[in-house]
Image (cartoon, rainbow, N blue to C red):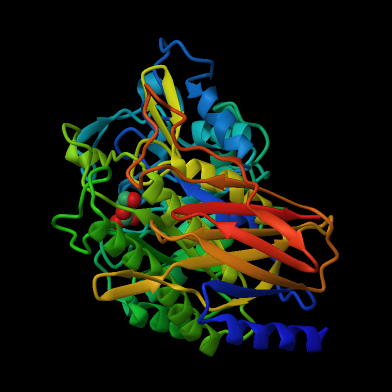
Length: 512
Ligand code: AHR
């Protein structure tokens, strides 16, 4: 096998200058599984994500359970959403969980100071969120309030959620209609504690984390997986200090937040739908920074945690553009084009390839906010191009990661270039191999000659997501412009897999 792999590597070098690209996929020594939690999502009390997204008016004419919209739930079930993060985001550090339990009419109102200054009636709280997760069939991931909350408040929330003993908190839960504890596992201790979560230094937050985390108890059959608030993009010092001062035995996960800004300028980010090739190129260049971020944060973590006990949790990622013209700037509503799908496909390939350390991630944010997978308008709902990427990639969940080796052709724009090709591969429990490939070049198709080492396969089938223009979107009038269709551009030739990968496309192949 080793010989075959080496032969593949030699071919790879020989072909790198031709129009064909040599790829070697090695199934002989998989080192880890790709956690399904990489395919997680994020839902904040922000704009129309919770209210008017998941949680709608009693009178809206769509199928509902209580006020939870079931067409949205069905869409999320189909892509097997593994976890949902809530209630924020910045909102988490101003959220007081006791405002969101008990009879709805008696719940206090608050001002959502982070997001548009709108009134929050707290009608969607703990019980409603956990009901939503149970309908989707996903794990809840709750972010507790460190910024403006107390240790006692957080500790009591965990007791309310997870204890089956008799106490004032658990009696309150029972009184509110829930007998059994929910046994929530994923527990965030604050959010962006360097910014909206309290403007802390990493040293101060590390101490706070330890203090809060101690009192978030593991109740019977309900061990918590505690997740510390981590770095913004390239703040490597934050990761260094947290790993040094808190260490791998006290954190199941340490987060990283990174958004793709098309222009690279937070002041004028760029439109979601009106962009030229130059802006597309700069967007993809900014998206590819995730590779460097994940690599460098992982290297720091390796220093303190060579056994890789602590997961790197990228619990906010995705494209952040200017809002749709005419919408509330505090609501972060943006459309979603083929460009967004190429970002999702590329980023998920990066996470798969780093899945020894990246074991959870959450796209921001599920419905009607930032890089959504679902958009709603009244009783209408559409699936975005990004949704279809999650539909293609769900085959990787909990599968063995395979090593992939290739030298990407360049996608050249003016005097700049980026790698045109990215991919990842896995083998599931039935032995089927799945390969997800992205061609970022909007002009050139790619021809790949693929050698598979240690795989017995007879057939190849696939699906593709592409469209005529990078700016193509799904609208409420034309909801299926960008969607997955069957792909016939891959075939077996001798022992090789030959793939013709169209320009600006995302392809998923299944080898059996
Ligand atoms: O996702 C929107 C916001 O971005 C989140 O509330 C915050 O954590 C981040 O800055």
